[in-house]
Length: 355
Image (cartoon, rainbow, N blue to C red):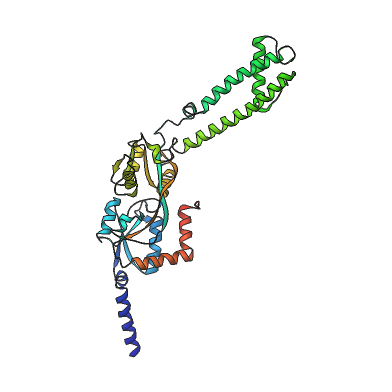
């Protein structure tokens, strides 16, 4: 009897210390979410999957929580419901910011993220021919052609009466010398000059040819690399003159407002991506893993990721202020990290990442 009384008093004590946790186990939690592949994805049958969904499911299983997902259509409305305690939790790609922390609680970070640019592939003409003519490559080619012609005249003058491979006739001899200048610039091949002056000039020309070919190769390589990265867009400063669309109530919108970047507002990121597909906007900014996933899946042939990740931030689960489930959720998350299950889950959705 004494043992039963002791256990009863211990249960009351634990309930007094963790009343919210006990209540969470006694009722079904409402977990708000929104589609943000690869964090949250919805299948054809309506079933939810994704990194955040699976991570939460494992945490809930560890804690013995019953829950139901509530799929929201707008990011801001989802967070408003968290702040007003209309839902118990929100899981997606929710950036942890000081402004949001003042209105709600967050779990420990579940993912290190940041912003990245997504640009429509045809927002600028990136055809190979047009790109070459808009680059420094065309200037290098023009200068090389002029130098090639001058070098041919010099070689004809030096060798016109002593080299059997170069005709003494002006037109035929210059043509022979043009061929030599082209071969010499590439690999210094025949015909070999015979005179001292011609040989000295040939050495100089071969050196010039090597430098010219190297510069041209580097220019064209850089050109096509940049073209693949979104028509030369490397930062939000390069978006000037383009129509940018951003989802309302997001860190992307706040970033643009703080830096004076003009944009068109859309109710959610799905609507923003649809506007990008239809050509209503030229570019958008989103969480790096989300825009990469879109570019490699639904956005193939439509949009490309441009530039590096900027404005790094951290993603977490959002909960109402003073949420009784925050500490248990954090402890369960730490257990998943310590066991290696978190790392395996992260690698399955995002692969091996830099850094």
